[in-house]
Amino acid sequence: MTDVTEQLLEVRIAVASAQEADSIAQVLVHERLAACVQQLPGMRSTYRWQGRVETATEILVTAKTSTAHFAGLAQRVRELHSYDVPEITAIQLGPVDETYAAWWRAALRPDDGMPQSHVETERKFTLPEGRPAPDAMEWPGVDAVGEAQHHHLQATYFDTTDVRLGRRGITLRRRTGGTDEGWHLKLPRDEDSRVEQWLPLGALGDGEVVPRGFAGQLTEVLAGEQLQPVCEVETRRVEREVSGRGVVLASVCEDYVWTRNLIDSSLDQAWREMEVELSHGGMDFLERVTAHLRECGVAQASISSKLRAAMGSLLRTDAVEQGVS
Image (tube, rainbow, N blue to C red; front, side):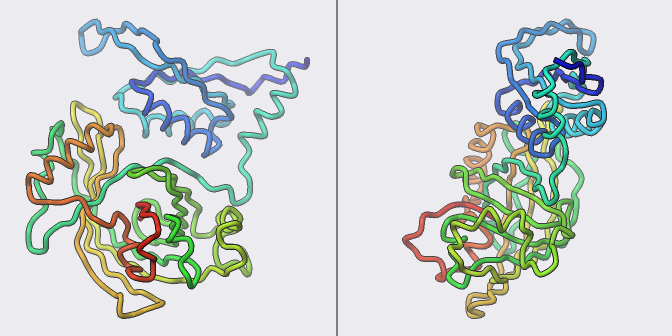
């Protein structure tokens, strides 16, 4: 065993729920800020907060990282964490088995074209034309609404001529505008969630139609068929964060959408919708918001995907509906 641990750290992070622990773990590992993230449930914490002694049951998250990655990891945890002042403390480890240390360091090195990934949980709602969206301050559990952020999004969606990605609930697009412009690959997970992978706009190599970091994952589905642009979507978006008791629960987007179908122009259309994407709110919050909106006359969209709405009859009606936007 050789002491090669000079830059290897184990970071402790206390979180409030298993969902939050999973979300932070997925992001840190996928973004190569941590080689491994472990979760230990059932930790009891007693601490002083705002002049009072508090006790809570938390989950202890430990992340294997290095001194070179600590600052980025800490910043990302602060962005994702529901606490105002999250615990982010590190200890230097040693000695460590040299084989394990070599794997650890390799897991933190970025691969060329390595996508970033996270789990996205959201629902879409149909907004009637000419009616304002329901006031989010009246939503259950919400006591603060952030300032509006305006975005102009322009996306090109890629698929085969028989839209075999769309039929399987897979979305591949290149989008400009907004805070996450770039290439996006969305893979179905469950009814309201999907795994979203991201690559920068510059990830496209010479002679590539889509980045190889995405195309390589789709080889089996494509079965030799070529990807090409199938739809263009323009969105005018107003985005706000909604919070409750100091925790950001969700991001709410009011969208005006225009689509141009590149296979069948008769399917071009426009509509208005609202997206509610969870941040630190749980599924119980999303269910309560859905029920509240229904009482306000705003129904959950029957088609939970901009692409599926835009492609219309080109997607077989017997295909399994998977919500990907």
